[in-house]
Length: 184
Image (cartoon, rainbow, N blue to C red):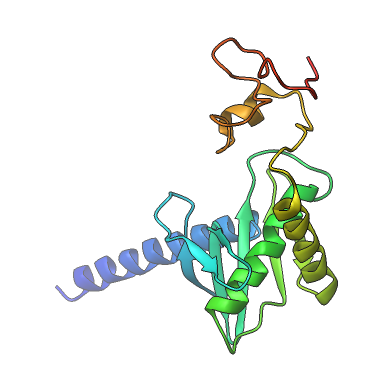
């Protein structure tokens, strides 16, 4: 009589252990840092975080807390042999946003995970200067930026596609007719 409940408990324990090991393996495969997940936006349920000081907002895919460290995590569905510049600036922005939103905690690095590679991006004074420089450049432009690609997919996913004078997905499929910098 006592053996059946013990057998059931043992099987439940083994089943739970298998689930935990599978989750741990998945975290490791995705290069998610060790620690407790305190924010998640992989399924668009995270709130928008902002830096009032810099006037920027962002939604990292995940934020991990380990002790007094906060680690932003960003997943990209493409492959890359090294971090792409735009993704680096995105991570630099997350550093600034998190420093403002989590005072007293440190943000030593963030993780940029591509399909087949992961990169640690270190939070440094130099990267903060790069972020501020690019923000200043953007704010001091005349509102006109030259498109730097010929990829319709990038335009399709861009939040500025409706107002961009160089969008590759305008109703006609061509850049804006009065665009002096047209590449097509």
